[in-house]
Image 1 (cartoon, rainbow, N blue to C red):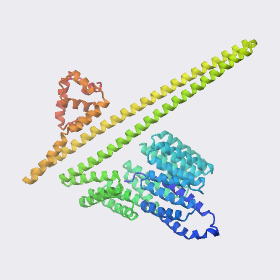
Image 2: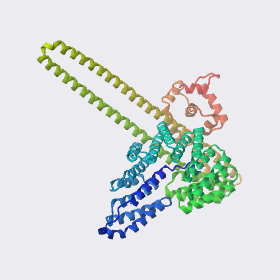
Image 3: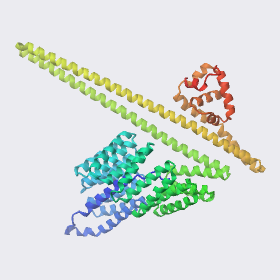
Length: 640
């Protein structure tokens, strides 16, 4: 299912391409003495044109075409402008392939080429900002966003200034500074409402709506999408209009208003067709198809999903093919065409192995497990479930490492800033000491030379001392304020760390509950199947059941849970041990789960016992820790 279409990068790339092409059209004529070099230019133009056309369908081929053009340019010692065209196509291809570092290398080479103007520089800076933002290097992204703004302001290019500001706002948003992002977007919106530029207004309104949607503020997102749709009526830009219609349909889809979502998806599809945008038509068709599935009309959904898949396949858009195949497989499962569904999910695994897309691989493994479970193929279901859990855990671990790296970077940045502040303080103190020393020497010289003016000198000295006291007092206040700021930063960092550990603990507890629930269901299914199985099949089922039981009783899950729990709730188990040193390990487990405010069903799933057994265990625990019948066990544990 497509959530939203973000076209800001493609807008920036389009603007840069237009700027480069315009400059190319104005390049100076070839002199007679250099006419022999003109023979290679048609071939270079052909290669660069081919690279441009190949970007969306096959960026790897686009890179090879541009690289061949660059080699030809260098062999014939052509001017730097043609080199900048080749470098741009190579940088764009690398970006689309996810090779951000390589794309930055080629974008920087454009800046080294002669014959490039402020317009091209600004758009290259914008592209570098996008690449750094995608890599998570937000400080550098902001630096290049400011460089782009400076370049565009030099030539008073208001449209590109707006796009650069929107780009900067996106950096703020991805860095977690939503308030700064929204303030910047609203500033741009106000500026261009006064200038009556509906195209830029539509772009900004759409970005504001997208951020509100990500933040979960559906009402505001809906309001700004509708403003953007209304704004499209005032200018003829089918691409922007279709994108906004599709995004608004997705918002209605998220609200489960499927009938209304279909209306906007059909409108978006029709607009994409008018604009001749094949991939947009396919996106809208895919959204229509999965919406029909949720409306209980899977056959209609399959028709539209197949159309979308055929278009994506013809355009060789691998990510889109994987997305459409996941939705198509889901639709086939709804009509119980399990073989067709399995084919779709296996194709997704093949594609994701090629394009390294972890999300769709995880989805395919999850649906294959569900498919095998629905067809009572428990052995295959168990195998796919193991693959799914292993792959999901590897992704979660990678995400955890990235979060820790971000925390470490923030901590090092704070330390670096503190060090800079300390050096600045030392510099101020040294300057103050020097000024004081100069004042004292001047006073001594004046006293020795002008004894007759002693009273005047004394008064001047008193004034200087008074100023020095004021300066010292102000410095002390400033140092105290900085100390409070640093302490607040440290406290905020500790709170963020505690919040992260709480999320980690809750995630692990949920994982344990889901795993045990699933394994119990699989065990029950196997036991029921064993009643009608022959001896050989019973032996195989018993072996699977044995492995499932081992998974239910896995102690390593509890040890890891205990480690996370003790990091958040220090001395919790020690306090329980002080109340009653004879508590069992199961008592400690029950106390920890109740501390997390889990309900009876969830705790029973984690402990692998029935809800009634859990109630009895909770009653026995109250006795062991000397609570009265009327005392609330969960209130007591939350107070430890």
